[in-house]
Image (cartoon, rainbow, N blue to C red):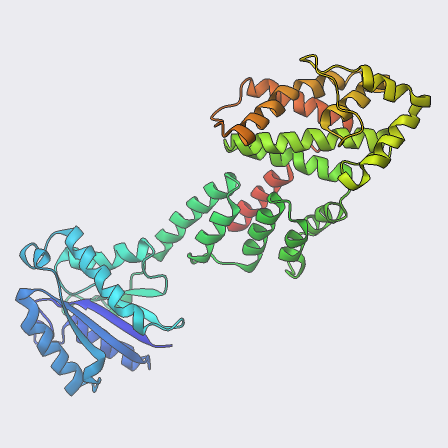
Length: 417
């Protein structure tokens, strides 16, 4: 692990007015005494400190035996030379210095910023860039005036402000998690100092689970030792494609789309949820072997014809949709066919109106998907969510708290110092 040193050149480099070494020489000397390898030194100078930069380079090569090719003198923009107290210009120059260092940085190397040379804004620029995340592996160093040091004070010491960046990153991640933006939170985590394998695994888990890729969600947490067992236990029935568990998952998934204002995605999810709920009632509650697969279409209609000696089939022949259209018989099993089958059986009398309420929203989904119609709001959203909740409670039941909200709480708890 080597160090790359970046510093503005000040009026007291390479030597201070007290005839002691300036801050650049002092810092590099300190690192060498700590047996820290110096890979490169980048010195930023203005028009008025150019000679000091050259003298500093000469001292580093002649006295500290640093190779000349490892020392880079970098002139700042003319705007900073003319206005050396402008913070924006100083930060831009310091950022250019960091960019110059990038080609020489290995993953284990550290940037060492000297915050004791140059004008006050030049000194501050390094801390600003560290706090902003431009240099994740970096140290900000201060060098005290030897004539003003108190007893037991170190002349060279670190003043890292990376904890401020940690606070910024934490707030951003917490908001991303509350927005169910697990992939975005993972990117923020990977670019922060808060990386922990368990949190990364849970974010992956949330992303894949929300995408209903349950095998990948399982793989994300299966090998992590300190993952709570509940997350693996919850994914098991989903991987087995248990109908009731899948319906509950689709319900919470749809609510997230609604909460995050992804209305078109919500309508697509609602359409699938209503269709699968109808299959759940027809297949699971009535025990009818009816499938939506084209290859099983003939067998499905044969099953329908056998119900109550053909009475169900006759009911479907006479059935009319809200607009007066008849159901297409002996074709693919549509949601209207399933809904009509549910309507035929009196035990579903209480849930049927709830299912029918969803139809207008499912029709809106068809307009959005097939007609390129945008969806910027959901009409009567509160009524829709209440209807959907009541329907789920009466058919397959739902937990009081969404698994994604519980996951969010777990993630935020683990992130909190």
